[in-house]
Image (tube, rainbow, N blue to C red; front, side, top):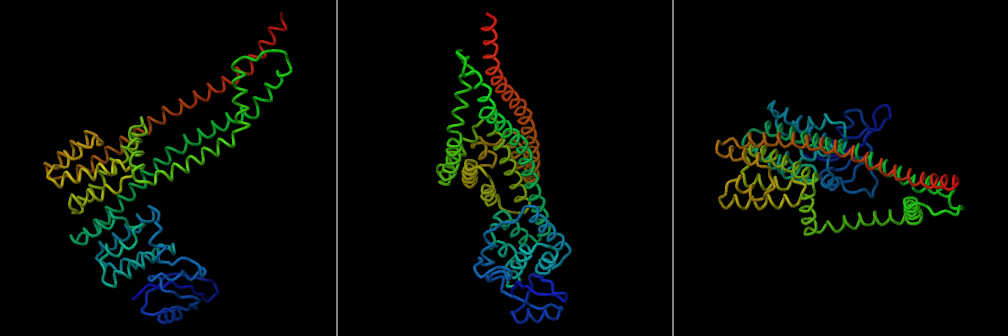
Length: 413
């Protein structure tokens, strides 16, 4: 059987679409007529036919599924649903079919049915998911493969759902923590630029006709104001071009490696990046170990999920040391990137044989440290920004008031 994407009209004339399994296109049309639907378009989804609702120039469906990811919330939901159905002793193909019927998003439905078609053809679930690497990454497929080998696929899928939700929660916390200070910074910069470009020149212009030397602060402020009026847009263009060029330069692996290594040395920001990646490392390796994935394979997979290239390289070096006979704790200690508490917990886990449990605790500790660091950083940043903003406004006020005071003194004399 193969998966077919269809578009049909119901009895009231409304258009409906979905995915259905059959041996041939003719059989699909027959099934639709039995359901009281009038088939409009039926195309093979698994072999990359265009979606029935798309134009002739649309990209093949299979290619789109293979190159576009899905949201973390959607992935966690379908993984948990699949885990529940597998735990209820449903065959994989039936569980996948049930999950596809449960979702109300056509693209997710097509994706799940495409995976199910591979399973029906004789592929394992991990092999079928590996066809869509932008949805199911190396970590996901490795854990599913380990679950299939061990016979505990439902537990592995539950861990994957928990892990996906945890990563999504951490990402949400990071975005939420950065939104407020980003908006505050942009508003502050916008207000200062508005004052310098629009307000200050109009006020200071009142003194231009007087035979009086302006104070240094006023002269400086006028120079800054004129520069922004004359070259502000040009400067903004240079900044945007610099960002684009920088992004292009960082595509080269050697430059990206150096940049990521430098980022780790930046005060406070580097600590946050290091904390996020060490927490992800500990939690990923923990669930891989709990899923019976060999340590070396787990280290290789874990290194790929880190976002910082310098830390990825460090984990790859640690993996080589472990392969040569070193303990995990000693191998990670040589990188000088992991906190001592995590290293001690890893050493205790290696001695006691409970590495996955202690790695999980280490990940919890790192998550708490990350939250604490973010809270401290925000508590420092917000008053610091207010102080800087107040200092700039004070400078503007002084630049305006000083000529007035000097004028009054000269008139009084």
